[in-house]
Amino acid sequence: MMPLALRCFRCLTAVRNRRVRLQLNTAVTRCCSTVQGEVRVRFAPSPTGFLHLGGLRTALYNYIFAKKYGGSFVLRLEDTDQSRLVPGAAESIEDMLEWAGVPPDESPRRGGPMGPYLQSQRLDLYSQTAQQLVESDHAYYCFCSSQRLDLLKKEALRTGQTPRYDNRCRHLRAEQVKEKLAQGVPHVIRFHLEAGVEPFHDLIFGRYHHEVAQVEGDPVVIKADGFPTYHLANIVDDHYMRISHVLRGSEWLISTSKHLLMYRALGWQPPTFGHLPLLMNKDGSKLSKRQGDIFIQSFQRNGVLPEALLDITTNCGSGFNTNRIGRRIDELISEFNPSKITTHSALLDLEKLPEFNRIHLQRRIGDEEQCHLLIKDLQGQIQQACTAEIQDKVLHEDYIRRVLHHRKGHITSLKELSSPAYSYLWVRPSFSSQQVAELTAEAQHIASLVLKLIAEQGEELKMDQLSKDLKTLAKQAKATKYREVMKLLRLVLSGLQQGPSVAEMMVCLGPAEISHRFQKLLLLSETN
Image 1 (cartoon, one colour):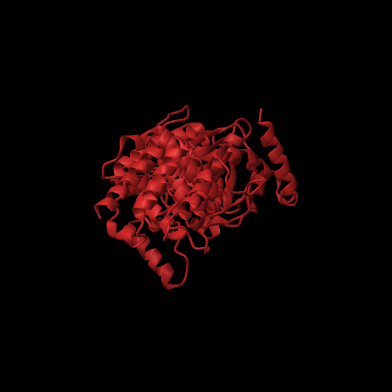
Image 2 (tube, rainbow, N blue to C red):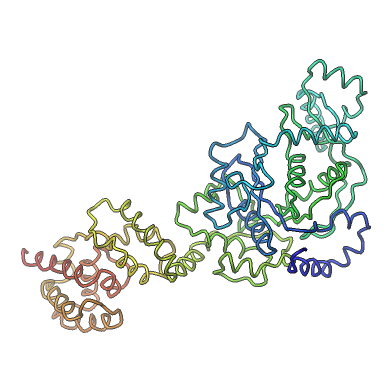
């Protein structure tokens, strides 16, 4: 049985598009009806590069769709372009999906009932399907040389036309084909495009019709090296992997008519198609891999939380009942509504990413289990970042937890806490007598006041009370204004001129460490 939520969605979609559906003839409606049974979607990137934001967004929508309707999310790697494969990219794509919190149910790594999930391991299947198309006169051998194809392209461009193959080899006689094959003439297999392609109903774009045979030449489906092209491999795999819904970028919308012709030629039921609007820069320009910083590994290295990345890529788009910051994956699944996906491009403003990260980091710190993981992560970062001597006590879990709870809502990334701005939390700062002298001539008196105050406070410092007590302390300075007193305290505690409030610094460091740092000031003042 189809899940109830999906049946409801189909009904809603039908109502929304009732005018469109009335225009479709019976054949088209039958051709593109939703596949019955379990929901199966796939993300099928090519490991010719590493996973970037656009790819993650496509994977995310597929994952959410599968989980919303109790289905399966499949990762299939389209590695048929062997000349462009990037070493390590295949493993990295799956690593990044798992890191992002959208792990596949079936994949090259996890396996599954419909494998293998690498196209290079399915070549026999594509070859058999291509032969089936040739034998049914829906495909043919093409022996045109690369030189001839280049000439066709140059002539088309010279006359202001769109380059296309002229279908010359479609008209070869059977004995000519047999002779060339016997001679070992290099060849490809092309699919015979037919006129009269049927319209189809896209889940997002509605009724779509593209008479592909009028504007394109017959496409190659098997290359000279025996590997399939995308057009053949993707429909063969979607069929044999029982994919029910194909959710992919809108750049593939124009190719879908071609794919539907192949489904028809093979006598196969096509899946339901939904083409997602593109993810663009905030100025409407195309996201480019050359930007470098759009790769998921780059975000991971820079301390961006996966849930912040998922949140910002969905927040700038559509397909949800509400549009708010701070949603995690379970909330995205709950609020997902495919009928609300629009055809407008999603404009991504990465300048807002720190704010998304701040919100999600705050939520993690507030969760006991997640906070424990953050502590472990930060311990490693501190040891790597601080080359100076680190005191053992600052790596203790309770100490780091205290720091995190006081800084939550203020920091946008965990990495900030291992930066020089927060090094005073892990390494005792240095300061000179000259720096002290520029602020006050009564440093020894102020140091004594601080030490007395801390001794009276007890082991657990309270922010509110400490703030009040510091104001009272400042008034006891004879010739130093409140502002300079605070600057002195900040210098002694952190070696810096700015940062969190002095009271927060003290609460984080704790009484023992505060006393040690002001004893140092006392000794410095006595020797001068």
